[in-house]
Structure formats: structure tokens, C-alpha cells
Amino acid sequence: MIEALARPGATLYAQDVAGGGRAVVVAAGGRGLFVMRGVPPAGSGRTYQLWAVGAGGAVSEGIIELRAGTARTDVDRLAAGTTLAVTIEPAGGSPQPTTEPVVAIDLAG
Image (cartoon, rainbow, N blue to C red; front, side, top):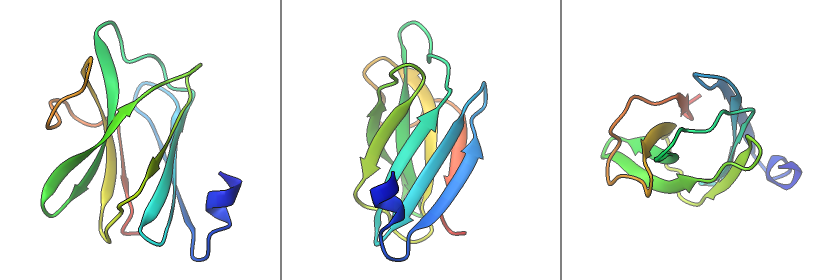
């Protein structure tokens, strides 16, 4: 995360996660680092999934693998005005969100 914070123009965003924990995004130059900490397991047969939500709808950024309540993933395509959101989905993920986000971070500022 220190490397991401050192990028020129890096901006830090943070938000509490419903059910416990915190999510942090470091964004710079159309790229980002997404981290969740202190998050409980999604539940049996369920998984966390990260979405980039913009004017064109939600695009999956992949399944979030928790290790001891922590997850980290790079996001390579962050357009201006994007919201990063996490939902709890069936194991293996979904083509579109099927639940309300447990966290949504608006990167517009």
C-alpha cells in the first residue's frame, strides 16, 4: 500500500464495511489498490465480489479472497466518477450484482 500511496496524485478513500471491517482504496492515474480488513467471512457457499460501477453499469473486478479477514486487489481501470462496490455473491461470483453492496466507495471525491 505504501507504493500505491507514493504514486503522484494518489488519493486515499476509506469506508466502513457493513457487518464489520473497513475498506480502503488508493487511486492514482486510472489505477487503484483496494484493501478490506477486519471483514467477516461471506458465509457458506458465498463470496465477496468487487465491482467498478459507472455510467455504463457494474463491471466485475473479480472475486475477493479473504485471508484472516483481509483482502487486497489491484484495479487496473478506474475511470473518473467510478464507484467501487463489494457485494456478497454465490461462490464463483455473478455476472452482475445480486445483492446490495456491503461497501461502496465513490471515487469522485
